[in-house]
Image (cartoon, rainbow, N blue to C red; front, side):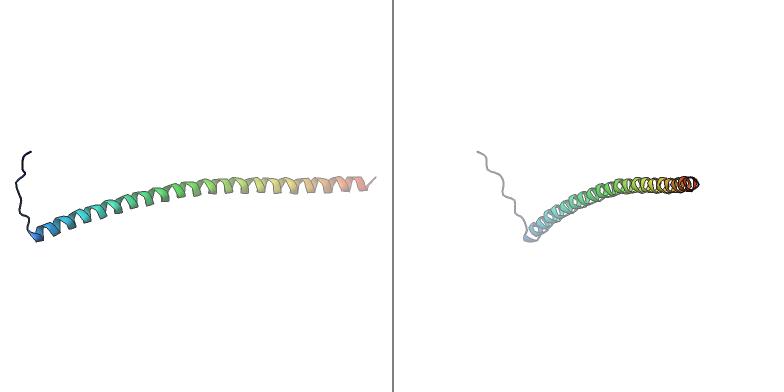
Length: 86
């Protein structure tokens, strides 16, 4: 087995290299967190858009039913007027 040559590392350089590694790890974690946050935000906004579409469709159906109800009420009123003569 061959021996590796000893490398003398100054104490100041060792600290800065450790700090660089820690800073890189923190930046990587921050990047991953931001990517996950933005992706979840995007997915939630898509889900809310779909919910809004469903609400709009439901509102249109309710308006259609209300219009049909009003038309039927007017037609029934006309029929009642016609049958009052008999």
